[in-house]
Image (cartoon, rainbow, N blue to C red; front, side, top):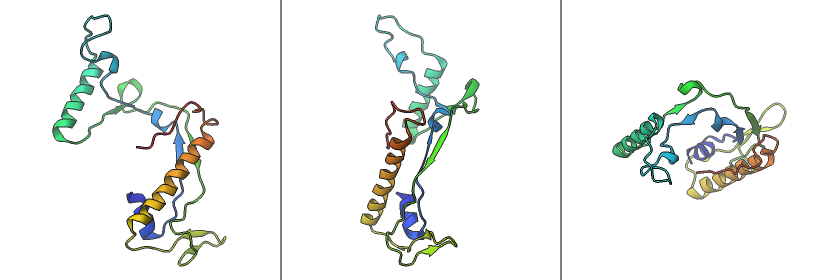
Length: 157
């Protein structure tokens, strides 16, 4: 909520944007599900890979320090990103405050800032966050087929 609260406090206009393929640039070190303790379905024990053991160690350490640790890697197991196809899309501007009072305009007459709210209420923050998330979902749905992600669903966590 920090982004939208800051937009309300400064009068900044938010431009929703989404990059298809960005999550394919790096892999995350996690324990492999097919190498879970107890072995394969056939009953035989499976020796966990180094990657899986490191992932489990990171998981234990994260729990111990009560914070998330994540290791990312790309090509050749190094921090060199993979080279996926990236598609960036941008949506229409979201004005934190809908009225024109207190806004500034550029030479073309377009609004570039809005009225500032020094101490926005929770309701104002929730409203703007809802409009932002709706815009992000709309962008994803509008362009996912063109970007090659027709089978994907957007998960906002």
